[in-house]
Length: 299
Length: 299
Image (cartoon, rainbow over all chains, first blue to last red):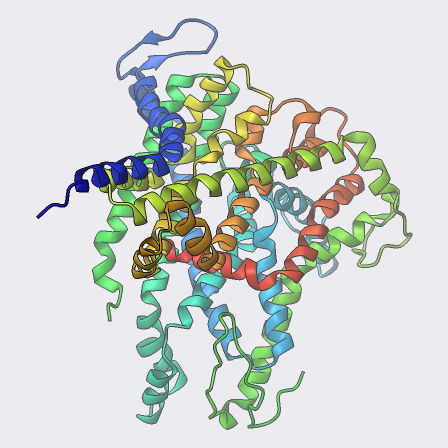
């Protein structure tokens, strides 16, 4: 039985709800939803921002898929993303397990600072610093290598070394993130289970493969998803250090997008590239969720 | 180092405050020593580039990069730091970065808190659908929406102003999602009790929910501040005058722009960006780590 005034009360709640969400919703429409729809439409136009936009249908996509450098760009991006996932997860997990075992308080503190702090530094500072660290004349890496008789390549101008160098710098910069996620994940591995396995005679190796690793698989899955999304959109170290060179050996898809959109102002074409990035990131993420049940342990 | 043979007395809380209570260590003794040494070497290598950066920035330019690599600032100078200000308006760029980070952190959190309250606590028609639409936007890569936003800012004459950067950042879908989830973990009975006592929405939100949400708010504030402070793609696209730039972009321009500065001056500028960060991090290490670990809840 409705009390009189219940309808008015109900309406007041409706209004209150919308009032609370309206500022964020308005901004969301202007700066996210609107631009998203606009970008999809924009991909059907040729527009240099100086002359009027011209409708060209799917020509931007045709041009994109027939661009002879696109396979190279996609290969660079996937190689970077794959290498990034593998190195971050393997090293991050091992490091977290190792640090978890360390009893000395100062050593544990030192390691958390040493591994995590680089993650807080801006890509700009990190890229500039490593540009010098790996420089063949300025940098201490080449200087020490020369002292023991190793002739180092010029990492950023040698086409076969530039991408691996960027992968390495990215690992130094963002390993701290994976490390912290893994440390947090290890808190969910119950010491009782490990204790029980040991009581049953399992050695460290067996404990790692049969207990720790399965229990860590949900955390590893999460780290994999996040690392892929970030790595596929890698941009800063490449724009700052190599500009995509030498010979496009480090041009990734977002670097390509930046060149087309914000250096040669082909706005429609850049929108088409951005849509491709969106579709690939979404597709691979869905694929990872689909493959989840094959290796992720669900308690 | 204090690894007492066979005894693990110093039980100290790890990352998230848990105590690792494993005790059987006698046969792992030597393994632990080796592990500790490996970890110390790893930690030192992680920090080596940063130490080299700071040391070199205090070294006289002509003597800085001589072989063998130098690990002490000899001959010592502070001229590099003084010279930074001759190449770029460093203080102005510092203020720009600070202004952006503060307005984005405060603004986005304000709107996110209001929206999250609406979604979590007020039942109104369409709230579920609206939330789903907003959350699906987390999948959209930043580059896709930044193209239309760039066109929008050109039309509005806001290119080369900080407004082009902070206006779109006032809405943060991840924050809305995170806070909505967080508010939902706070028992609703508290609201009902407060309502019976005559409390309105404002009282419930600001006097009850927010004081209970300290850890969530500080984690989101750190993440937001850090993302803005370190951001590069946005400033690179929108800002062109040195006096309007943020620190990360200013650093890159200092190294690569017209009349680029000598390496030691660039090092001094990077040091001025990294050193305060290091101090803040060492003070608030726990909060920084917790904020990153909590971003893991996203999965």
